[in-house]
Image (tube, rainbow, N blue to C red; front, side):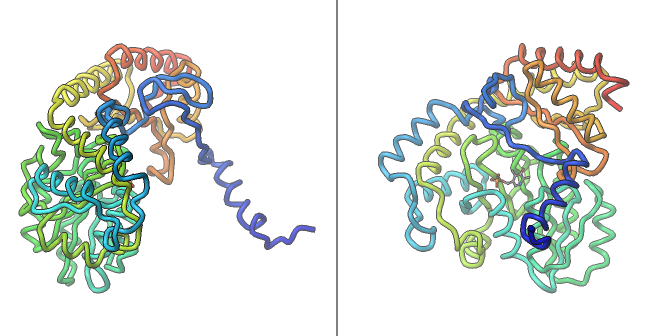
Length: 398
Ligand SMILES: *Cc1c(COP(=O)(O)O)cnc(C)c1O
């Protein structure tokens, strides 16, 4: 007889519950590069689900920079940054990111999750207060909880709600943290207003620009460039390199003192192996392309415009977004899955996003665009959506 308290017996009830609620997650196996025409589990699709917004993940110049650096530096960095793993490629990328963002300095982290963990826990702790938008990315919420600071979530983009909470705190260190572009909705945080509010309340502002960096701003400088926010307005700027940059990793940019503080006190910076130098070299190539090739952002805007007008004609429920993240809100989990499946039958790959990633009842198809998509592919998507809307019971946009 199996022991009723064995690990498998104990764990399987939560799995069964998740399956019954249509919330079970399955992984697909990608057999091609991350491009608009992907091969997944042996089948070809036109995909609208990567975060490779500028189409740089498979760019020949980025690949070549990666290969050259691998020949020169090998594959693994072999140590953490503070031990002996901080290579000249990492260092050069940090200097270029600082110049690009107009900050004193930038510090590389191995992932965005770790950058958020490391920055927030180094900046606030017990006796301090942290205020986060309730739609913030999971890594920011986890970091806030881990920090030990008094953790509060304010209503999405609601400055009055935030002010009310700030009025009630007696903490000396107050940290306000938001996504620049919200990852599941695609809308922007009101950063100029938040920066003013932070100053007025003697609070620090941190922005996670994972989805804005590379996409927004004339030169791809992200939310900070788009809104013209200097290091003085926005002292803690975090960006990731695995999305619009098409590579891997993340950084925090800010003052000399901020960066030295992170080097000394960020545990997720100190106690981990540095990213491979070749990844940093590839990212330097991405950074050059991203600044030179304005057409990528311009084409992306054309794709977004075409999609939004077509989807509105079909009566689909979109959100207030001008970013490459264009979710179609469906609501019910099972229905969202069914629609994604019907689209897959028509050769279109879009992922159904369900709770706990989004709020209950707000399941959605998270459509994302890349500069490598063509206008014809957007039309293909709209045609497929039109078919699926026509064959499903009731309006999909409910
Ligand atoms: C993707 C993402 C992260 C995590 O970045 P990784 O480099 O993938 O770990 C952090 N914040 C936001 C808003 C993100 O979308």
